[in-house]
Each structure stands twice: as structure tokens, then as C-alpha cells.
Amino acid sequence: MGGGGANERLPGGSDPLLPTKREGDDDDAGASAFHEFNGASFAGAVFNLSTTIVGAGIMALPATMKVLGLVPGLVMIVLAALLTDASIELLVRFSRAVGARSYGAAMGDAFGWWGRRLLQVCVVINNVGVMIVYMIIIGDVLSGTDSGGEHHYGVLEGWFGMHWWNGRFFVLLVTTLCIFTPLACLKRIDSLSYTSTISVALAVVFVIITAGIAIVKLICGQIPMPKLFPAVPDLASVWELFTAVPVLVTAYVCHYNVHPIHNELKDSSQIKPIVHTSLTLCSTIYITTSFFGYLLFGESTLSDVLSNFDSNLGIPYSSVLNDAVRVSYAVHLMLVFPMIFHALRLNLDGLLFACARPLSSDNRRFGVMTAVLLLVIFGSANFIPSIWDAFQFTGATAAVCIAFIFPAAITLRDPQGIAKKWDRILAVFMIVLAVVSNVVAVYSDAYKMFHKKSAPSQG
Image (cartoon, rainbow, N blue to C red; front, top):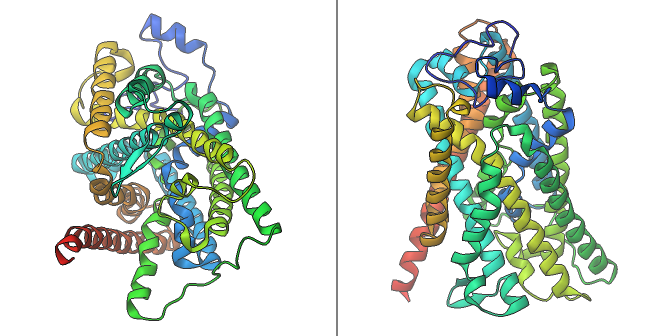
């Protein structure tokens, strides 16, 4: 972030994965390759940040409308975007004040060694969990899944029947080797700008198809009036409202990729409008998906709305539209995967090899770490599919720490004495909101898991 000291290694090994666009002269091969890169464009940075934001969480948003009602639900999506924008602004401003070119360096300046390590652990936990869930969903969409004794056919099974080559293991193996591995081997985050553009476009395709189906059914009078406000007949219903908070709070988590994107910009002063543009784009996608998804399925909306596209929609070409939605979403997740993987590899390397030379200049370490991480994620997605429940605890907790608790803590610590009164008020609010949402998420998930286990014994 700043011109001076850009070539110096940050304390405690918290370098970004790559040098900035002005570096790389120490290594002749690296320098010649880097000279071809003149800095990331505004559009590329917007799509990379937007891809980091829009992942599997988009599919849970229509269900929050069922819980909160349309009006409070849509308002909460906008408020979550505004709060995320404020937390990123605090993070960037305090990073710039201390010359920190990574999130870890900013945490290290405020809290020392343990602060930097805590952030890296949270990013590793969050991103590993997210990518395992992505791979599980891709397997479910393409190869089908068994739930409650019933087999839900995947897209490939529906097209070609059940064969060994469209089973979950082989499909995920091919996806990992032919898609994830090549994209994960790209060292520069800007190299993913084209795939990020396609990823965002596929999310828009999903929104357009969902909106089109809902509008057609609305014109035909097949959609009842949606619930505008929540029904709260008893105390339990009030408590249920809070279960939507963690989904909304974590919907915009992208903070771990802000610094890498910032470091590669042609003009570093563009980071603020880039963040604003990305959040506006993602908010539009979220609002449209939530509105039309809930309008289309109403009280039948499932926690993962993609599961609703496994049946007859009651309109012509229903099966074609179902497949289009599911395939576009699966490909979207495939292209989101390397963006999340980039931050995972960077932070795990900082955690394990704090004093080593930059990862970009050590091809052996880069290759081994990439291969091991992909193997762990692939194995987990194939052999521990119930890991979704486990990572609802770790993922939700780590995500809110990354998005709100750590930027707020840096603001309250204020080592440079630049925090304003409003900054401190906002920081306290973020921490309170994050803690409350964490408690609610952990309690609600624990209750659901316990209820599922105890229900058969009661029958």
C-alpha cells in the first residue's frame, strides 16, 4: 500500500503471495515474466472481488426471506452490504497507515505475532471448509446424492444414465485434475480475472432464469402472495428470526482477498471504488436471487434453493431450465474455487513457513502445497460428505472474525492513533453483531444436529 518500503519483507513473513507490480527484479526469470504485467485493471479487480463474495451462500438467501419475510429480508441484505463496505474501509485505511500490504501484516502490527497467526488460522479454517462444501455441491449437482433413503439424480445421471464415469468420485477427480489444478497453479490473482468474469456471468444467468420462471408463473397466476413480514406467534418464532443473521452477516466475506487485489492494481487509489462496485454488483445479484427465489417457491423454499430445481416447475421446458440452473451454478462454483484457494494457500504458507522466502519464488514449495491442499479437499469431499454440518460451526465462526471482529479490533487497538469517534462506535457494533450471530449460529446448528439424532429414538 504505499510507495516506500514496498520491496522490504514484512515482519514475521507476512508477504503477499507475489511482489507488487514494481517488484521482481531480484530474480531474472521472475522479473522478465513480471515485466509483462503492468498492473490489474479496474474491471478485472471488480470481477475477482465479486467472485470471492458470490459463492455457495447465494443459494441460502431465498430461505432467509422465508424466515424474515420479503421486506425485512431485503433490507437486511442491503444493511449487510453497507456494514461490509465499512469494515473493508477500516481495514484498508488502517493497513495504509502502517504500510501493511497484507491482512496478516495489519493484524501483526496491531496485535503482534499471535494476531497474525489467529487471522491465518481463521482464513485456513474458513476457506478449507468453503471449498470442501463447494466440491460436495458440485458432486451432488453432477452425480446426484442420496438423502433420506431417496436418490436425487444428478445432471449427468439424468442425461446418460448411471455409469461408473459419472459417479461422484470420477467426476470430482476429473474436475480436480482438469479444472481446479490448472487454475490453482496460477500465481497471480489477476490471472483469474477472465474466469471470474465468467463466474459472475453464470451467477447472473442463474438470476435471469429464476426471475424469468417466476415472472411467467406470476403472469399465469400460479404464484400466491409472498409473506412480506415474519409471523411471530410465539417466542420460538422470535428466536427463529435470528437464525437468518449468520447467513446475512457472512454473505459478503471477501476481506482476505482485498490486499492481494489491491497490491496488483495499476492505480492503488482505485481500491475504494472497486469495493463499492463489487458490493453493488453482488447486492443486486443477492437481492434479485432472494426476491425471485422466494417468490417462485414460497414456503416450500429449501435451505439450499438449488434443491428446489429438482422437480417439475409447472412450465414448459421445465427439465431443460432445471438443468440449465444446476449446470450454470456448478460451473460457477468451479470458477469461484481458485479465488478462495489462492487466499488459502497464501495464509497456510505464512502459517507454516513464516521465515521462508516468498512462495512465488519457490516453485517446489508452491507445487507441493498446491497438490497437498487439493488432495485434502478432494478426499474430504468424497469420503466425509457430512462435513457440511461440522463446517457450519467452524466456517461461520471464522468468517465473522475475518469480516468484522478483526477489522473492528484493529480499529479499537488503533496503534497509529487515527481512529475517529464514529470508527470506534462502528467497531463496537460490529463486534457485538458478530458475537451474537456466532452464538446464534452455533446454538441453532447444535440444536438441529441434536434434534436429528434424538428424533429416531423418540419414534
